[in-house]
Length: 239
Image (tube, rainbow, N blue to C red):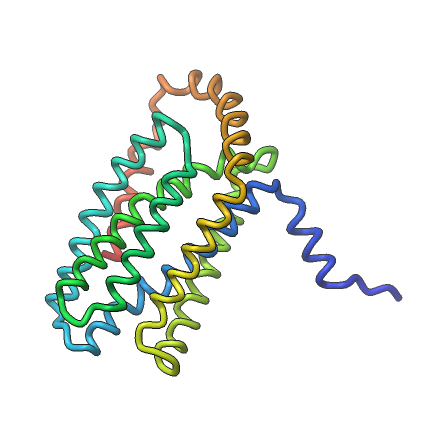
């Protein structure tokens, strides 16, 4: 009896998705893998080195405020230009800067600066990562595309926290920031390596979607209010 090779089966399953959807899935995995440990373990690390709960909370508050402002600016930029390469690369560099600040931090000043950079990087990254999925998924249904990318994010966060916790305990207390820097460099490499094809695919997909947008842009979806309130509730609950 012939038993299919699991690797070949997995490769065939992965190949069913468009190239650029696979690309953004990899990018979102690396982003979540790097951010997973940073988001969930940073407070523990800086509590261990002597920062108070108030100081740690202040860092998260500043990060949230800056993240909100950069989300607004990034959303406006994406609406006007439709370009995703620059925001993804910029957010990666800012996240790298945040990592270095938090690695060298021994007091509240560099900690606050690092958290401010994290907020800015997240505010630029998340709208861009969500914005691009419908343009990269064609001809795959958007529901399948979002299921794929968000599953990769869930896996990335799990591994980021699990491996990051192990590294912090047995290798170096701030290992998660080195891991985040590595992940951001991987994202920059993927973007620059595929810069031309990304631009071409975006232009083609956006041109095709323009007529559909014009049809619905004057209509107020009856569920829009519920969706907006739900997003606000979900995204602010953790903070």
